[in-house]
Image (cartoon, rainbow, N blue to C red; front, side, top):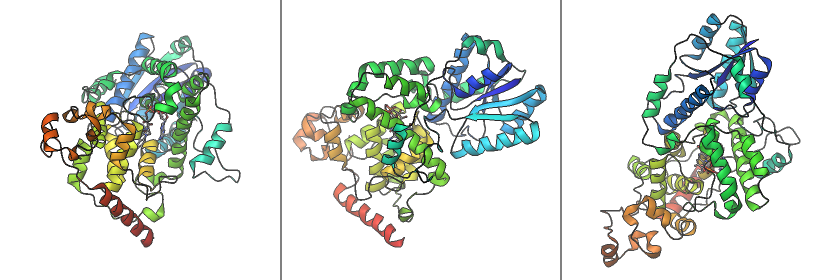
Length: 472
Ligand code: FAD
């Protein structure tokens, strides 16, 4: 049996379901990654560079083990036809499922073509999530729309254990084909954003090291400290989960075996949110462009491009919002609490369409995951299935005082405010002229005045949301 193992969002050897199956049932296996023109963005993005850095790392790691990963490029149908031409006895294609978005349609199209035209059977598996999109249903067979009952059921169900794969088995069965290699193209895509340090922190080894450190040092504080961006008590594993450099089963198993404590269950609940959003996106495929709640499909957004630019660049005059956006712009990652606060600010205070925010995050996040990003944005904009109520508008100043009480996170990312002592670091617009001089801040010159009055903006947002409900 000659097979092809097609890597996509599962850039690892350890505990990879499709790879394990391919090795088990084949005599020869060709390992490939395809630069699909439909997915390689013409515009260079941090998200894209980070992803391809992980592909390259997988390739390099495999070279060290004397295993060949072939980097191919082109329209998928042509690539698979070419493989068949060169490898007439190829009969099985293995890959891990994409259950939503472009990936789902792509997989359906490729599987159909392989079956009907090339005579190749596709074998696909749930690997990206602990529970696939169709696995968890209500007793009446319907899909869940609310997180809490979904979580209750999710917790009860057994989880698959990590799978062991021997390198020797892969090495023995691994083969290569004389096809053009596109490693150079890969390097070019990565180099576009080489200034981002995270782009170099790639690979299974980095991911496993991070998991180990999280279990040893952070998980026991996770419940207590995860909302404080300066303490930085979260795992940062999202980046490796979205590329598949670590498997979700490996993480779940490590957490399950960690010493008992509140942090464990809270963390596991976050992993469940990931499955939940995957399920929601699979059930509502037009979610990237449509508000899930029909009553909020008629919101009249203000969509002021100048305000949007100020939000993107961290120049809103709200220190925590600005610190958060600058964290994103300089590191490619943002703390979860801050994602919620900046998304609420964009959609409610500035009345800018959540789709604009979702698209900006898509370009900038090294952990960009369509289901979680769309889910997170629809949650914050109150347009999702189980989202924050529309009348709950985060007060950016109160959130700042609560989650960055000493203003240390602000000082780190908004250095022009770093010298301010006390609580006014959260509200520099309240500085007197004497204080401005003392702390080296010139309001509206070195740091902007707030671009909106939160109190008025809150009232306006609620009215706009209610108007949309009335139209509905
Ligand atoms: P931890 O707190 O260590 O959590 C562990 C893992 O659980 C994460 O790596 C992630 O896989 C999962 N997780 C945690 N919180 C959530 C959540 N709310 N929804 C879904 N999964 C979660 N997460 C992404 O992975 N990609 C995105 O593109 C993304 N966009 C978001 C946009 C908005 C507006 C919001 C509010 C949230 C978004 N999230 C996204 C969810 C969350 O912010 C990140 O998963 C988290 O910050 C990643 O950091 P971490 O790995 O340290 O998280």
